[in-house]
Image 1 (spheres, helix red, strand yellow):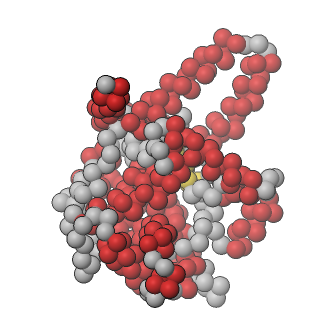
Image 2: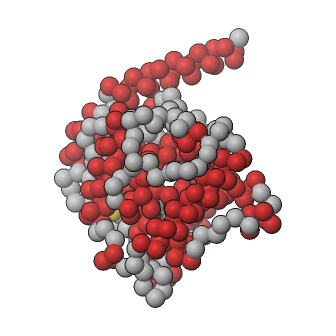
Image 3: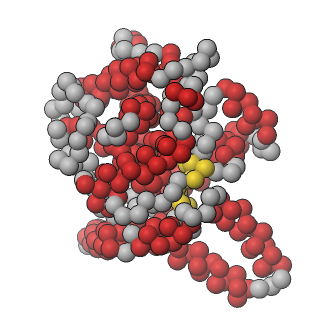
Length: 351
């Protein structure tokens, strides 16, 4: 009986959350998100910087009533823009009819989740990434030449268009697209090994502008998906992948494939022995360079400016992200990012 009531609770919560995200949540990016988009810097980043001294100041001056109102406001915003969105029904990864221009061809998929499908998809991703890596000019160190790829502004605008285009298949992605913004403190974000953040308090999609540029289209599309009420990390990875590969821009297509490849690689390595894995087609040297998080030169600058050890910050971030996801009903915690593989296999098996 207890299990029955538990299931009924979750069904009821999902039904309400689905209704809320469909009918109410779009008001926030269309109003508040539109307003914060007018500001050239990250409002959410400054909110995080100022909130701790503000709370300490209120405590010091014994302004407990104001502090209580502030905490209530934070709780309401987090519930409306974050917690409720975690309770929605899972995304339908089999939707394909409204999407055109898929880059995947000549690969046979039979049953979602099969070992053969996983290896086939991994191999295809490697082939695509190797081919794309040859299309974009690199310097003698293997770093992408800025003049050979879209500018950051072009990437930001194309990401908004690419996410909006997915609304044909996923209507929740329609409506106003907030303007992505770079972090002021991208060095600190880099120490967390994060490519971006969605700020519920400011309805913003913020990104780390120090990353290797092949990460940028995918990262921005991922954060934009969050601003439409998709809070599960695997779903945002999946939507970012679709937005990238269905773009007409080859650099976006490259970003989509090279961003999901590490997840595919990890699962294939779990499946195969080292000897069998070593027999698979390898990623070429240029693509390996493009798959990095930061270049060596940028990492050196980050470490030089660091106030705390990167290892300490990364561990703290991992615990925070893992705990946050588990508290919000994602039992796999930080592993939720890698569960995009399941969605990819379902998507291509539905072809």
